Image 1 (cartoon, rainbow over the protein chains, first blue to last red):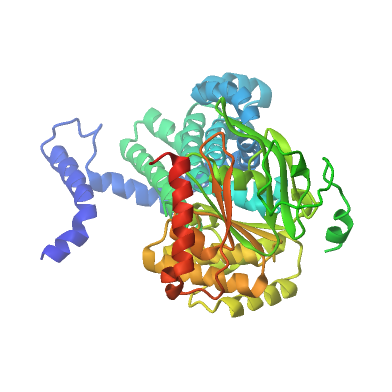
Image 2: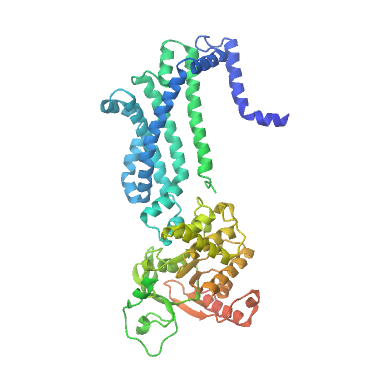
Length: 252
Length: 290
């Protein structure tokens, strides 16, 4: 009995949440139009995924998020390693990075709209912009906190600057890089969903949410919220799994 | 190897050669003869100066270390034992001075270095075996040549370590063994060891001392070991370099003429005991403990 309970432990919260929701609808605490019963929202989710547009929206949001994340990583990781290894240079650009990292990415939407026009390009560019700074910051710090002994060890064995960079600094910064990438992709997802809501879109989870709201299709809206949640959670989970196998030495 | 013969011609700047040579490493600043160095010298340090946070650590420091011998460096806390070998090994810049290995600069010399903190010196993202391969890769050797060298080394060490494991999966002693092997695989001309056994338990320390002795007897690599344990310093060394408090000078350079292989019995040998107590006396004087 207790064994079963431990195994069920992680899902208890989920069951509890659905139960509360279900009871709330039974007791009609909220307007049934605003808060449909869970089975209706669930049905909308399944219908949307199987025969409706939700699957396509889901795929579009993933595509945009992943693309902007890949662009961001391709820029931020090599740049971060280089900046971190030359910490004098990093100190001189630290303020700029910190400043724009603290700037809400949504504040640059209008600027990027002017630069890239209405369409996918702008969404991906803004998401990549926000993501780049987060990843860059983490990679650079990972490199700067590299164990000096390992760097010295490589140097004493005859490694030149480039070899130290790719054989030591890169690996040393990898645990921190993964933290940066995880934060980076979450941020990219947030920006993409917001952009899909307000910047001329015809698909994506953000678009589906806004459309459901305008048509007052509440079950669809809840379904889209869950889809977005599942996406964010899933991406994080994938990253943690990769991290565990790839950065096997982390924390040891 | 080519560079060795070529570079040996380079002269050390300085005064006239004396007829009556002083023993190795005993040259003191102030004597005009200190530019001379005795035959069999491998490492010459001349006019080395180093300040540390405004206070003088080394001032016009000279040192000659013999070839093919083990020298332990021992001295009071804060006298810069590690600092001096780090400067000689090129890990730490010096303010002034010159260090030559057989007349060659550090860049022309292949050196090995074993760090005190093996946990932070090995690369945890590489398997133990790849850690040992790494310096050979830097030397640009082919896979086949690398394998040959590593096999040879493994055969010599005869330790029961699973080299396919990652460093953090090994015990402390095993990790330091891997670390020592990594520094030996490139067949260094000089091997520096900075308190290599101080993070190990006593049993492992005894084992590692004998491993080091075996390696030395087979390769006769010039070794410089920093130690904070006088017994260990004397046990391992052919010469004990005793340093003073800062500003650091050479307090004494004591020969340890005990035959090798040395063993646990050596520790109770009258000569060993006598040398150890002489070192201790000098140390106490220099550390101003008495």
